[in-house]
Length: 74
Image 1: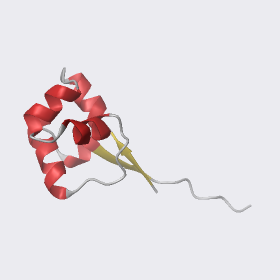
Image 2 (image 1 turned 90 degrees about the vertical axis):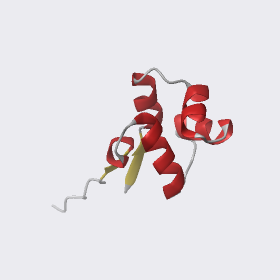
Image 3 (image 1 turned 90 degrees about the horizontal axis):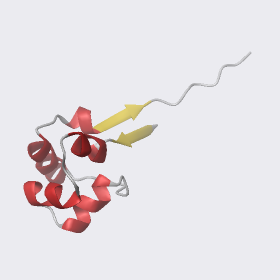
């Protein structure tokens, strides 16, 4: 299972840099930086809510699950 972090992509589309994301979300610069650059392995629900509010986005727009291809037996 792979979860793709699209926070930085969505933020860039909206014209946000890391500093703007941090300011609008109320997160520390370091947390915003890690999320923006997809370096965070975990995102708490409170943090995700702040990001969703700042970007006016649903969680499913920011975190996308990509299923692994099942091996075909032949």
